[in-house]
Length: 471
Image (cartoon, rainbow, N blue to C red):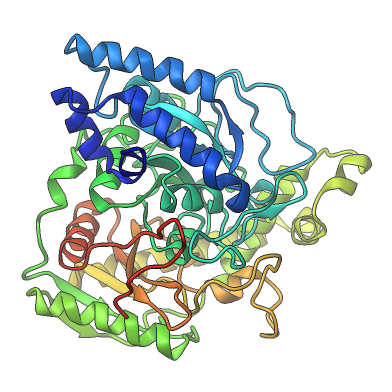
């Protein structure tokens, strides 16, 4: 029963709490037992606070007993990425330079989840300052892929993804400044959605500012929609937030794709994709056509915008390391400083030119979506590679964004983008496609995601890491 509770959806848990058939305490105990069982291998957590989680679960159980739940996720075991504040727990950001003392307040998404009764199990791992697409750092060591612990789960929300896939919690709050929700979701066979910038309030903001989004990683589309409904509620601390729309995103999951116009691009015009990955993604796209969508292969969509992204990341990392002492700089991963230091001599004119390039790309995609409801691409061009490396060994690559060309453009444009698992490669590792819509059209992304999941349910790893795979 404990294993069943660990892998149960939040939707089913809440229904069970309401009927009295399930208990928040039992669900939390099961999640904590699962953490004890497998976290030693996969290293998904920075903090686990079982006593606090069980106290919160008992309070949730009493509310359900009285028929007075706090909200939509009352009693659901939840984790938070360690770039976000949870009052009473430290926020280490994967860095030896961070303050080990407790945070004084909740980040915006954490506050909304707490108001709705979520039970927080702990905080999940991230690379230092969330700077790269794999999850390892001097502070917490290496986080591993749930399908094969010798492979990376991706990053920077690798701990959230490993926890989600292995049942170490049900809902997982993550962040995405260049692909940090979508990369680990893709490598780990999970659903992850980066909402439109501003849809989910953020406080405090990352030094990456308007590139940085917060959203869910989950085992099902329905759970992501449930969590998005909660965390999209307003927070006055976020000056950048869009006006609250009071949407229940769960209503879109069952909308289907019949009649939707879908553009498919296998490379966006510049990416190199492993042929096996490409075949699996193309098979997934064909399934949308089989379900009644109008699919068009559009080829190139835009030129690689990394020059713009890289400059903005450099400025963000420079802000994040500004004011550090020499002793602190000595504790920081050298690539962080190597990427940050050029921004210290950047002119305001050069930065404004980068913003203009960003505006041009965003305008291009706004016009693109006049003709297409959705754009589908591969999520990642490869499957997960060995741990302990920033890039796949032997490829000649030097930095992580070279193997993740489909993620960072949509942080520039701020569009909603979701990772949808679509099969397994011959190495037994997951492959995923990316579904993108115009700004504030999460409804379309969820419709397509839900339709695909219903036709081809997502598969999670089992205890012995073997699975019947539909290749």
